[in-house]
Image (tube, rainbow, N blue to C red; front, top):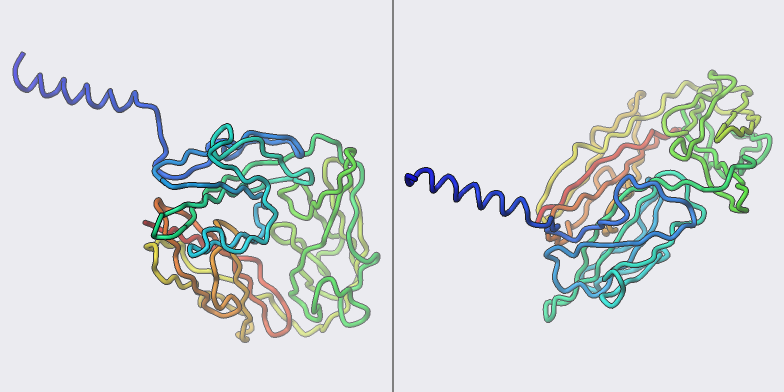
Length: 345
């Protein structure tokens, strides 16, 4: 056997050896339940995390959110966990089985895509404390059948200056985009919110010249008059008569643009820009930024054209998602726009 053959065989052996090693995450990661898992509302699943190379973890807290809910868990490296304003589904330590995991109850009122966020508290000795997170998106389904659907609003609904419902804020112009709160009663006695197509709800309007259905189950006022909004879900339906009397001055809704996805280094000041947002009539816009993915960070100037935050310290790339909606001076809202910011170590 010549020297070249020996070298080739050695390389092949090393490559095969590493392929046979058990996979191990390099960063803190939720390994159970997995992304895309179908879970039954109210059931109990086993939460399991891989600590990866994140040493010094002393506790892991778990939180449930709807897929597009705003993040409510504060992350503050100076206090490890910061200000917690969302209910903790479970707090797990090393003594539990599996370590930092265990039995986790799926929300009884859950339905549709939900995010499971795990935030690990890290002790860094004399350097203080910190935190790291991971999250997965799962699909939650009630095991009980749906019995009735109802609109959680005035019936009939009046939108406009004459007797408008305060639940929708200022509604006095064409172009306004809003969501109807819809709830469903199930045979297990639980009432669940089903206002989005992700929960299985479909929308129709009997008069698209008054209100038309736009993306994500949102509705847009396009004219004055009467219409009937009908929703269906799991073979059930409900209808709502709507009377619209708003300022008939033509007005198109603005368009939100949250900018391009970006990657930045931990510790950097990150700027979110809505500069590419626009109003068809060329009028000034009002801005509203919020965070919908990742452990919560402190977002500055959330009601300005440009919002900013300080990228947290991470051991592996972590993605944060932000939502932008803009409103014109006549009160018409845009559809939401999203931007992802990946923080690199």
